[in-house]
Image (cartoon, rainbow, N blue to C red; front, side, top):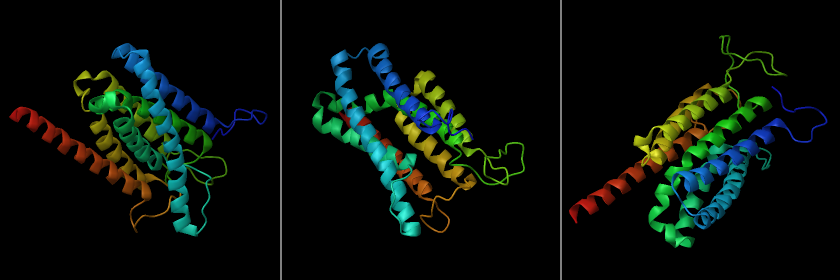
Length: 247
């Protein structure tokens, strides 16, 4: 839609929105850990190291996942684009595992930390999806409805699924940030809520993303992984609560 601010500006709008999203996530994480939960600066700095590692893994994972499914589709392995779900799953996994093994002072507090920072991940994703809209990628199926938007180079209007997802993510961020009663279950709610939303949204996507099965896109497969992760966390917390109750 608006891929660049101007022809003379060296950075495209998609990259700008990604950078803004990452900045918003880091700022939110620092603010919540230090100001709202009274973590000492040294403690926060250690956590930020693992966040930085996770961000690198997230980016690499999103590149490799997208390249892998393009390879299955046309036989060409190119690192040219990214897919969010291909990055968020390994990124979060690496953050949790590395915190467990290399930041032993936080070993029993990892889930609490994830619950604190996960709204920041959602906020970053919401901002990034605006970048997708500006770049004209990740669009929806053709439509004649009032929601349709005609991107440059297209003959027909399509659903702006990028904005649908961005609005949903901003709403989910607001709910998890402001609704205090869910503070211990933010990560689980995210896994189920975004997993379900993304699974359904894929049926409205019009861009070619490849197929995991005849009717299932790769992102729908990863959405199921999010649900399974959420189920595993519920089982873990149930067993942990049951173990404490029996003592």
